[in-house]
Image 1 (cartoon, rainbow, N blue to C red):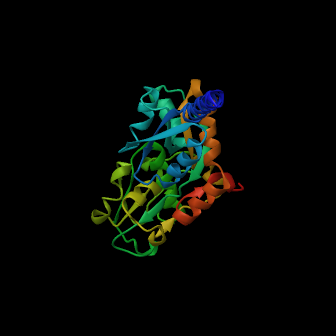
Image 2: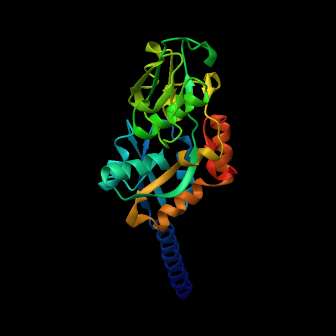
Amino acid sequence: MKRFWKIFATIAVLGLILVGCGNSSSSSQKQTTVKIGVVGADNRVLQSVAKKVKKQGINIKIVQFSDYNQPNTALKDHDIDLNLFQHQYFLNNWNKTHHGDLVSIGQTIIAPLAIYSKKITKISQIKQGDTIALPNDPTNEGRALQLLQAAGLIKLNTKVALPTTRDVTDNKLNLKLKAVDAAQTASSLPDVAASVINSGVAQDAKLNPKKAIYTEKVNKQSQPWINVFVANKKDKNNKTYQKIVKAFRTKDTANLIEKLYHGSEVPAWTQKF
């Protein structure tokens, strides 16, 4: 009988050891934290992606910035690992003016620019001498001017790829084009007839994209405006970062974008240009 209890006790101890080892193995999965810089408060899509990659041992930490001037500097200084807020044109211009070597590691969405107003309900109501606000950073200013041209309000020098207000060749309504910080384009609405506003800024200001008086079309000309994940050049092939990009560019993420934004953001990887 004593021998039986000794054998039983030995088996029980071995069982506890094996259970302990199993728990240790499952709880010791290496977690890699990736800090991603964003502009704007609406991060529902990225939060959804974060849940997916957490199962792969990747912990996404979203780092909020208040304007477009900060996230690339933070990335260059290695205060963050990636950022997700800009299109390719903006990135190219930033690298040129700041002697940077940041690179795109994957396309995400196209966020059409739109013209909003609190004073009128359609583009034809803009009248002589009205003031139109537009973002003042070089790439978004040029894009906004092209949108105003598409809306029939101005004409631009066709030889210039990225125009400035100096490239306006026809302004039949003598509109005053007021360049302001992109983050201020929505808050300027009470003081202007209309404002050209980026999608993220419009979302933060709770503007309804269906009430925009004019919206940028998504077509083959939209490709420079596709938003991208951005990394330092040395991290271009980082496998962890590529897993995040892959998790973003999925059918269920595309469905979520369409459900949340109803066309004010469009999954780029589903478009045929």
